[in-house]
Amino acid sequence: MLNLLRILAVLSFTCMPLIGFASTGEKIENLGLTLSPLGLLALVFFVLAYALVMAEEFIHLRKSKPVILAAGMIWAIVAILTINSGRDPHDLRAVLEHNLLEYGALMLFLLVAMTYINAMTERKVFEVLRAWLINRSFGYRKLFWITGTIAFFLSPVADNLTTALLMGAVCLAVGSSNPKFISLACINVVVAANAGGAFSPFGDITTLMVWQSGRADFFDFLQLFLPSVVNYLVPAILMSFAVPNMAPAAETETVELKRGALVICGLFGCTIATAVSFEQFLHLPPYLGMMTGLSYLFFYGYYVKITSTPEEAEFEQFNIFNKVAKAEWDTLFFFFGVIFCVGGLGFIGYLEIMSSYFYDGWGPTNANIAMGIISAVVDNIPVMFAVLTMDPGMNLYQWLLITLTTGVGGSILSIGSAAGVALMGQARGVYTFFSHIRWSWAILLGYFAAIYTHYLINGAG
Image 1 (cartoon, rainbow, N blue to C red):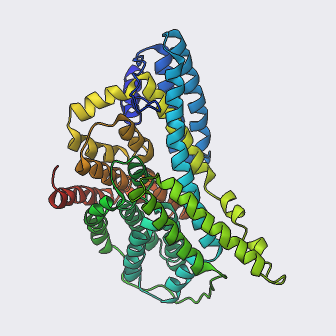
Image 2 (cartoon, rainbow, N blue to C red; image 1 turned 120 degrees about the vertical axis):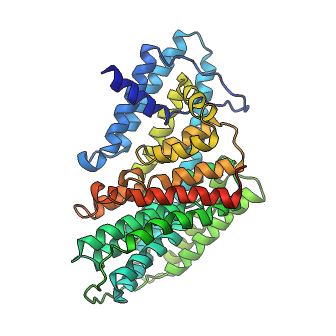
Image 3 (tube, one colour; image 1 turned 30 degrees about the vertical axis):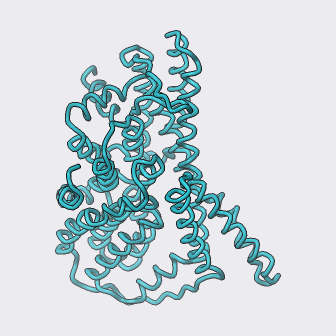
């Protein structure tokens, strides 16, 4: 039992931030109570909660529920430890406020992106793309490459989860009579979506976190384009030889865009440009630019309302606040739980142990590569938040490396990314954990090839 707790503790250290920062920017010393009974109890709470998150596919318990509960229990323990140690309660409030600021910036940014994606979905933008692919009567091998390529280039804008679900729907529609194709195509889509999301702040939560933290500018992430391409192509080429060399039965499906679909796509592009401009030229946080861009959609919704005829009833169908309500609130609340769980554990002092062991002992390159492997088992969001909060003093090359590794490392196992977990649910019984792990060796080759490509192109730093 003691050995099991030690293993759990080591795994958990990869998900713990060090300490918070006061609004003045001063670093607050952690409590240093990692070996106290209450400190260990807080660690156990987090491990149990995350075990439930990893088992979501099997127990059907939304991932936000256990981490929010764990966050409350952990901070109750942190408060008791703070009082008993005689520390100034101001430190406790400062760390909480820092975590709240981190979460608020992330939530507002994602809420706008999710609202736009929901609006485009309701206007049938993605349905038209899916129908077009189905009607073209491509062979399985061509579909394998088309869906993977679209996933790679769509995920930098639409995020890897939305992209995976869209392309997964295409694979299921055209390959319903061929389970082998569906399995291989889903693996390919997961790898492509995660790889494509690694070189854009809009493609993956971890990339967004690095951008919003100021460790890299928006255009710095373009340096990861070629490494991301390599990460996708290596396993795709190896898997393509196993794709059946035949064509599915021809199908015909007609889908028309609803009114304003292309306008909304244009407004989303303007919103992205606003967020980038706010950060690059005005030095304002990206979430402020995204919220400004949300107003574009609000005004367009008002225009649709006042120009609709009673017969069209467009206003009832196109209510922007309905799109806000349909955001992935489970995901947003999950982020709350993760940030506050790891924030509390970091204030206890666990991340200082991790920093000493990994970054001081192994060096930043080996540590960042290890973090990517860990993100295949433990979600990349707490891993990246841990590294950001720990702030090991890395240069741009290393920050891009950790962005790359945590972004694409989740592809190694199906449970390592939101895209993989979502597709396992969508293609239940066909694309599974074990069907994915058969090709983990090829994905791992792509992982290390991408890291080497990053080294060759961008220099060791």
